[in-house]
Length: 380
Image (cartoon, rainbow, N blue to C red; front, side, top):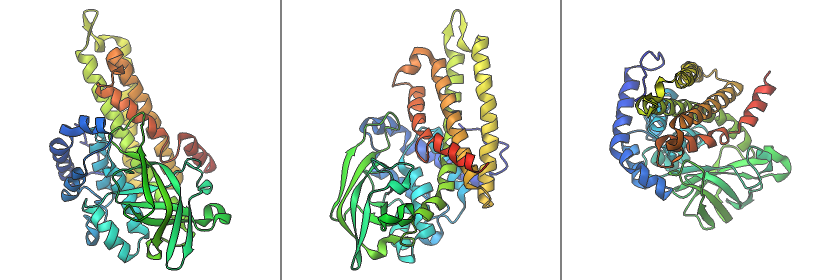
């Protein structure tokens, strides 16, 4: 269990939410994690459970099915889900997809798409990445051509989280290809629309329970009213949401690193070696002491970043730095934790192996560590 004592950004109502999240996870997620991991997808029913418990979009206004709170409550949910090893699309839906709809959607779009999503009745995804375009958004080749009162979308996307489960997907497409990134627009596409096709559920190194897919768009006719934000204004919308997205990843990375440390500490204190425990060796204690110091710094920094975000003062450079530092630290901690388990850590059935597998992508999605360094460097 995460130790949250002494963290000034959290109050009694945060702790009450945390207790509620833990109950939901204990009753409705932990008994199924192994099955979800094996299947490569979680039960849709779990989204209904989370929606009923108010775990989707706590910062979504009450008028659209949310709790009308702020991002600090999202952070509580992220910490608990990640610490428990429930790496599912709940966090994507709550921290990334819903904010696009709330921040840029029309009243009709909010009522039609955000409200059911906040209640867990529908599942959302966001489709930016393409086979030839990752962080470089100006290289997106998916197009949306205006045709009367519709846009006709053609192209493909890959590495799309919630791709198999999603009912609604926010798609980045070129409406003015000659303008590069400035010709990008966002569209709300329903999975039931003709021409929308799902590819395979991709075979990933880690985060097995999260469905990740290829998506294809073949002459998908999307009503003009499903344009999200201004035409040709998609790049600005995407940049506007990156601060929260990268902060959310940083929060999750910190929680996952803490879990890996706690698992390793418990294991070394129980595992006998040469007439004593692994923990009794100075090298083990020094390794754990170094990790503990990094975690102490990490919790102070992530709380600072959340507080700064709530004040609307967290800059894109600071969010990129948080994403970079915490995901790199997560990798260091999980790799050291696996090493401390010895051969047992290399077995897929061990928790530390799953934590290690799941950690690797953190330094890639949401902007690679190298892109984060580029962003930080430009701000120097």
